[in-house]
Length: 113
Image (tube, rainbow, N blue to C red; front, side, top):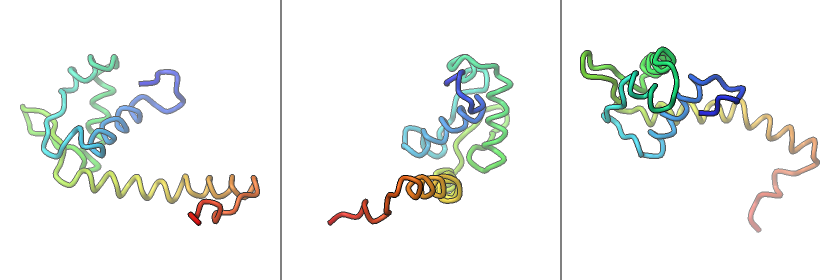
């Protein structure tokens, strides 16, 4: 976690969990560390971790087995890909295209000859 980043810690934690799922280091149906375990591992308040787990549960990425813990939902990778692709196209691509325009770059410069 980058405690000096402008990005809120809970978003950084959620991104790290999602990145683990996308990379395959965390698989569907894997149990993830408890709120307290994860908070201790990364040095944040367990309430912050709980907020992340609740957010990811609401998004369908995690699910809770009462008394056992949190697990990665079946289909979580697809959900993450869909959301991140949409965010990339809606937020990042327009910024990249605008920057290219300002710098006088043509998109065709990236096509292989």
